[in-house]
Length: 110
Image (spheres, rainbow, N blue to C red):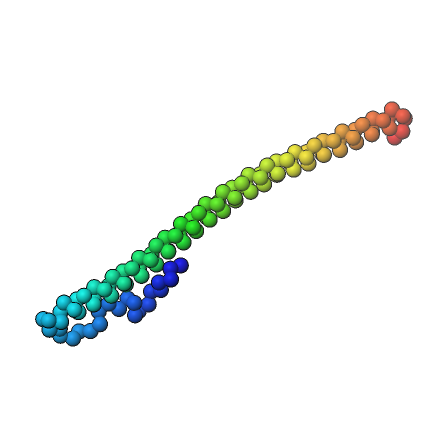
């Protein structure tokens, strides 16, 4: 964040409604212009800091979205593999049971 903090005092560029004489008008105008330039610099510095912060947040959001997409893909692949293992286990259990029954029948057991 910028070291230049926006305060009411820094943004106050016009200091009074006093009547200004012809000879003082240039001096008052110069004072106003200097204060306005300082206020503009403070606003610009703060805006630039905000732009940097928004860009950093956007970059983090993109990185987070990419990471979540990768996690989702890995989770989907894991689920497919788990379903395959469960099906294989179920088929193997059935095959083992049938073989066991066949062996018992071959031996004459019931």
